[in-house]
Image (spheres, chains in turn yellow, red):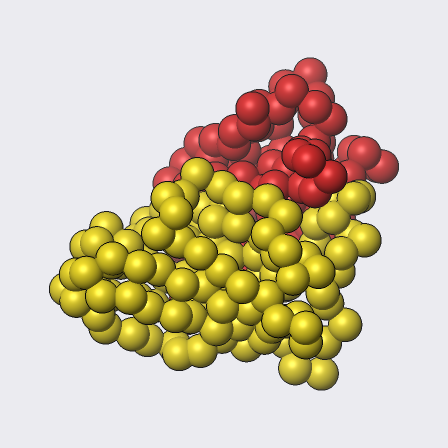
Length: 116
Length: 115
């Protein structure tokens, strides 16, 4: 049973560029959340997708957008990259019903994004 | 609003000695609380969770945590540290928001285990 998979594992971009990160959830999961983890910090919630819609959003600008596909996989898009967007981006999956009693998240290993 | 404070950025112990990682939370609602562990170059893994059942929660790898509402704490303990426990640990508080639970992570505590 594959866990949460993310691609690519590492990415280098320059300021102003756009980037797309991808996530496949654990088998049987239908909810995908994205987190940004800056160096030395805890993960910060970006947004959550369920049934192909953004269900919740954290305190991130509109440059951060996402999408969920019918097979529950998800993409995170970041436009007009800034140096401060350099971070580890984590994807977590869960089962939709679980969120009503407290989430048990399964995390991928992340995509390390470096913005130069 | 909700927040979580991990009181130590680093904790250093010797192998075989007890581990205590401290966490305090603030929440307007009855929270769900979690501890996650992050080993280098790996994703976060759930250690244990509290969701208003027993206040003493047992997790994987011998870890446990006690929910103390009066102290708004959820400290993580282990009787005897192992070298493989060296990792980053995150305390997480989660409260309902718009039909879902949005988790807030602490800044993390780095556990260092000496031989």
